[in-house]
Image (spheres, rainbow, N blue to C red):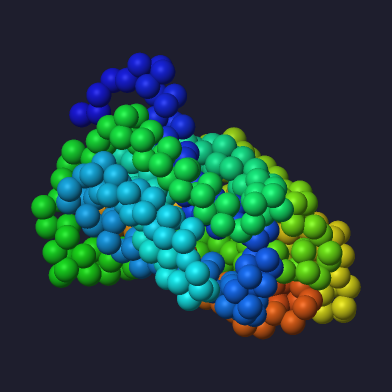
Length: 404
């Protein structure tokens, strides 16, 4: 049984859960304005610097396979606190890195801790709010969470100009320390139906296999992962496109990035308002269609040699609006049928999501040619794959009314 909380305690719990889910965005978005400067500081190329993003995505992906089963076995709180501690230590390691290889390693370790926040934060939401209300809660959290990546590039640009790129990792360490303290005091244990065999390797593999056989889970997961891959392509490529190609100063990079954030906020807010009326299947499909439209709208001008803030940020707003509409509801749709395996389901979804995002970021860095074309093409492909995932499973078994 979950204890009854006072209104103040409930508010702090909501703040804590939102901060936990925000670990991924703030850890990537804050230092984006510093990527060109880091390239110069380490005397390397853009692909090597972008590898700090790819390493973070892959570390995030791998660790999610561990946190979910551990939390199903031992509870959310102890596993979450351990992960947040790892994040804090790794952030200090990134701060002290003297080579780009050392920073890549630090970012990988940082991701191993950071992923505990969203994986277990979403599992806690599923524990506390149930299969239906969790979708609405995650959508509203997505709206609030978008305020953090809206402010992060602006703050990162100011810190870059004033103090250099290392100041961004000081800020991440401070964030990690604050959320660790907040979690310790404001977030009690939420998972009481422990699964003693959840961490057994054979059991973990069986759980993952059963999840992948569930058509609703697979459709929702592929839609979320592919749309996120396009989103991550923009995160990886936008510092070089906006700052180097289009000449936006680092301190103003956050203003350009704001188009993406506003789009995601609007989509997340709408998904929370429209979920009960239209259902998750329609919302996820509509969001993926918007992602495809945004990717194509950016790719066509780039293919014709047109590169301007309008031709990049307008389609970017459209893509992120679709992602905001699809991703929170798609996450809830994937987790809803599995109350005893919410941690494992969140882990597997997050692994596929971040793994595909890492591939997208690597492709953008490898094929960067001084134009928006590689970034736009990867975004368009991500939108197309996301929409195909929904259309391929139009009529799966409708467990809890939340299948894609």
